[in-house]
Length: 248
Image 1 (cartoon, rainbow, N blue to C red):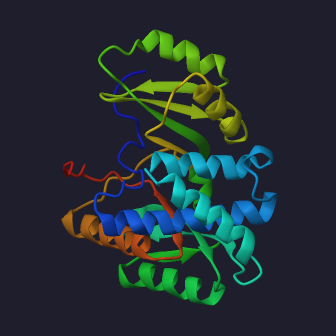
Image 2 (cartoon, rainbow, N blue to C red; image 1 turned 90 degrees about the horizontal axis):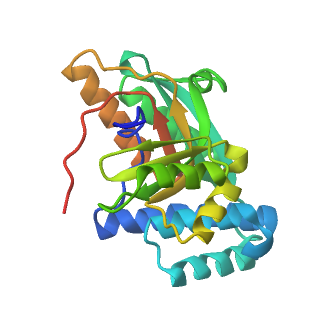
Image 3 (cartoon, one colour; image 1 turned 90 degrees about the vertical axis):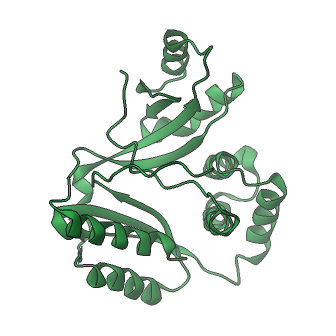
């Protein structure tokens, strides 16, 4: 199935500057801390940690940073108690938003997220108020080169246990059941494939087009404020936004 996927313009932006890249590394470091707390610091016996390491590598996080984050998490878990909290709500124009956070202060994060919604004409909802509009999927993005064979790649990913593959202009986008994500990723890695992106995402079943320019700007401002918050790991939404030009 060719063409742009319905979530192609909803992914977290890759770091274009050193400052933004540093913020992404900090957030991945928190994911590493959660993974180490839940399953230990040895990636061989901790599949969640292996998944986070794959995500780190797809974001060009240096191996030294990854190892330092693992050691820090293993040595300092007694000092910082992180927890994962997910918020759901609506942006202007009926746009559904899911905000995944990792925080050491539930009250601070709840206040910050509520402020972002209120300041931009949105509203926070209760758990489950919008998540039913999304499907949780593992998503692996593989670079498409001029000599890539689409049929061969499709066979490779399906044999690895993936659900589907979409062919984009410059990439293959592979989707998996979230429970199969680790296994599929590791099978494809074992065949020498590398990923532009590798993570579990919340994929909207349908998208919403903001009704006018004012609504669009409010939606974009809300999403930007949420993504800039240090406690926010991921922001998923179902808005159809204009694609941003690539920055070199």
